[in-house]
Image (cartoon, rainbow, N blue to C red; front, side):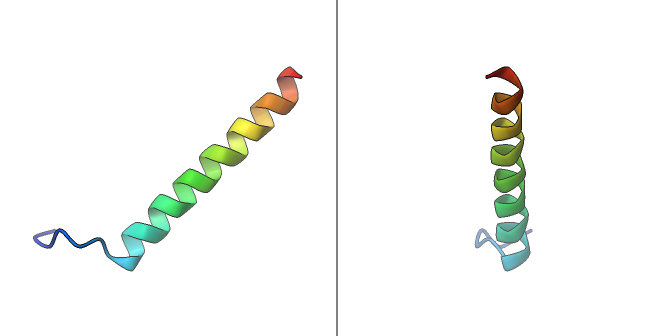
Amino acid sequence: MASAEPTNLQWAFVLIMVGVDCFNAADFADTLF
């Protein structure tokens, strides 16, 4: 963790979390409307 440069693994984790968050938000909106 000494390097400030993000690794591919960190980028993949961020992308997965953002994707899951967007999917859950869309799913939640579907239940509301």
